[in-house]
Amino acid sequence: MEASSRVALAQARERLSELAEGATGPALLSLADELFAVARLLDGQLTLRRALSDPAGKPEDRAALARRLFGSKVSRTTLDLLETMARQRWSHPIDLVDAATTLAIEASLDAADARGELDSVEDELFRFGRIVAADRELARILSDRSAPAEGKAALLDRLLSGKVSPVTEQLLRNVLTGPHAGHADTAIERLSELASRRRGQTTARVTSAVALTAAQEQRLSDVLGRLYGRTIGLQVTVDPSVLGGLVVQVGDEVIDGSIAHRLDVAGRRLVG
Image 1: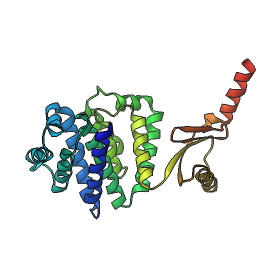
Image 2: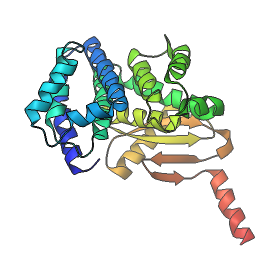
Image 3: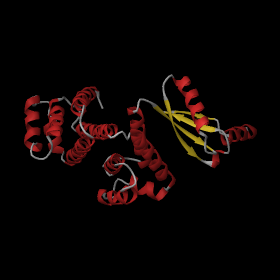
């Protein structure tokens, strides 16, 4: 997003925080559902998103348009947020779609917080991401932008219904069936990181040849916390192909201390 849209999104986020304060889990889940639906509608209606973001119009006129269009279709809370969005100055009409999706995700995570489920939602997102990453056909289907959203939704319902938190199901169903999801494993990883940040910590993705004990995980978390100067949570994947040692990824930084990596480096030196 360009500068004006970033400012607009910040204003909408601030209003969401005000509206979410003290709201119940079910109310926040409903808010997220409605925002996801609005994002889908705006994505498919270029004329509509242009009208709601027209810089030539007055902010209150755009807010009034939002009331006429959505007043009888969404809750008062959702309408309040849509009016706030319509009053802002957006760099491009498509930024309204991204903003509505971002706010929907944040409302869903607010619901997880209200339900006391942030920890479990983050863990469920991480584990489902590992399942997708390990299954090429599943990853291909969920990453295929030309595949019908209804088919993806039905597949996700079979995989998730009754097995994960309603928040996890809502996030995965809406994000992975959206038109701009991209690679499924990347989209799921982004959701997991957002849940981790909401808990006030940074996630380190750790790959180990064997399962780590609780004591080993705590020591590693402490070491990384001192290294990065903030609380670090671990998401550990067991992969025998690393042979030994650990591969640790924090954001874009990768610390590869695996035996497989060291053997590869040694082999390249011998060949050189």
